[in-house]
Amino acid sequence: MLPIVDSHCHLDFEDFRDDLPVILERARAAGIVGMVCVGSGGDLATAERAVVLAAKEPDVYAAIGIHPHDAGKVQPELWPALEELGKRDRVVGVGETGLDYFYDHSPRQAQREVFERFLRLAVAVKRPVICHVRDAHDDAIDVLRAGPLPDAGGVIHCYSGNSDQARRYLDLGLFLSFSGVLTFKKADDIRAAAAYAPADRILVETDAPYLAPMPHRGQRNEPAYVVKTLEALAQVRGISISRAAEATTANAFRLFNLGMPGVS
Ligand SMILES: [Zn+2]
Ligand SMILES: [Zn+2]
Figure (cartoon, helix red, strand yellow):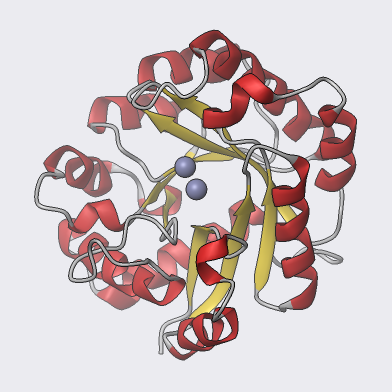
C-alpha cells in the first residue's frame, strides 16, 4: 500500500460528527498516513477543535486560520489567541487564509488585510501558510509578493489557477495542492497546471467534506478518496501512481515538517 498524505481536510466539521472513527479507519485502510485538519471557520472555536483532534489521533495534524469567507468578522482580540494556538504541538500550518472573490462573502479589502495579517502570524509562529484562493489569483500573488512569506513556505490549496499563475506561485517557492477537482471534466486548466508543476512542489488533498472526486462527486468527501485524486495526478503527469504517492507524500512531510520533534 502506498503511504499518502491528505494535506487539507476538515475532519472537525459537523459532517463527520457521527462517524469520525469509521472515516479515520477507512482512511488508514486506504494508506493515508497523515491528514492535515484545517480548522478555519469564523471563530477561534473551530481552530481549537482541530488542535484537540490532532492531539487525540496520531496521524491527524492541525492548522489554524480564519477562512476568507469570514474575514469581515475578525476582531482584533482574536490575533493573540490565534498566535498562541499556532505555537502548539501538532499545529503544522497557519490557515486557511486568502482571497475568495467567487463568493465574496466578506469585503475584498477585509479579506486582503486578514490575509496579510496571517502571513505575519505564520512568520511569527514559524509555520507554513495555507492559502485559499478562488477567482483572485492575481491579487493573491500581489499580496504574497509583498509578503512577508514565512521561511517555512506555504501552499495554494485546492489549486484552481492555470499554468501561468502556477509559475508565479512556484517562483515564490510555494507548493500547489490538487484536490478532487482534478478529476472533473471541465478542469483542463488545472490539469495543465498539475502536469506543469515540478515533482517536488505538488501535494494532494480532499478538502473533505467538500469536492469529492469522481466517481463520488456530489457526495460527502472523506480522506480515503484522496486516492482518486492521486490517480488523476499520476495520469496527467504520465507517471505511476506509486511515484505520484512517493512525491506528494515526501513533499507533505517536508512542507509541514511532519517529522519534527514535538509535532509528529
Ligand atoms: Zn479552501
Ligand atoms: Zn478547506
